[in-house]
Length: 219
Image 1: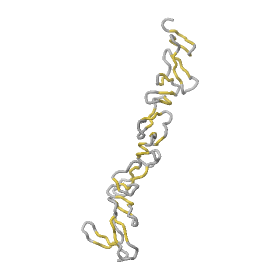
Image 2: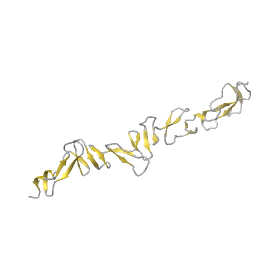
Image 3: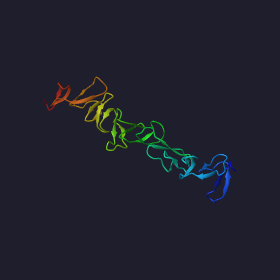
Image 4: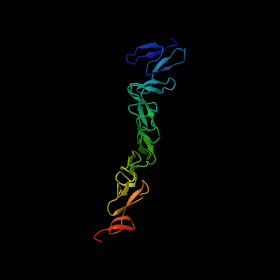
């Protein structure tokens, strides 16, 4: 009939006239004209394809439809795998051009960054925020922001603090509650940026660089 499509079963070669073409086939031929047929989709593992262009629109066999229209085993970098059924799985773009891998569509779902960006809180940043430092500077890929030690506002790495907060004092790259003997505290007027500075030579205890309270060595 002119309104139906000729379908040839690839399993046994039998033919039949169908109202619509089955999965993995596209419909060809003008409406109400004889010679309409069902043609297999060209893309491997394709479940549905465009009638006019043969472009795949849905994959089967647990494959993912990527941006090029191919059905792939796994999505490429910059995309996450969407769907869990045997058909209808797709590759969806990660949020942000510098995100190499992600687990979802949200702006805070990135797992690895590229383009020399740093991963922090699921996002790719140009610089690490206060209280963190950049890790992985030897490569433009896989960089991350790691937290500084406790009470450290800025640091060079995980063991060397540069600025302390919460009223702690910086000494030898660490944040301490109070300065040890032979040192005095600077910056006590605020809670950030306090440091321990050595007293003058032969002074065991001082209030500042000019006022020694106790001399050492019996002086």
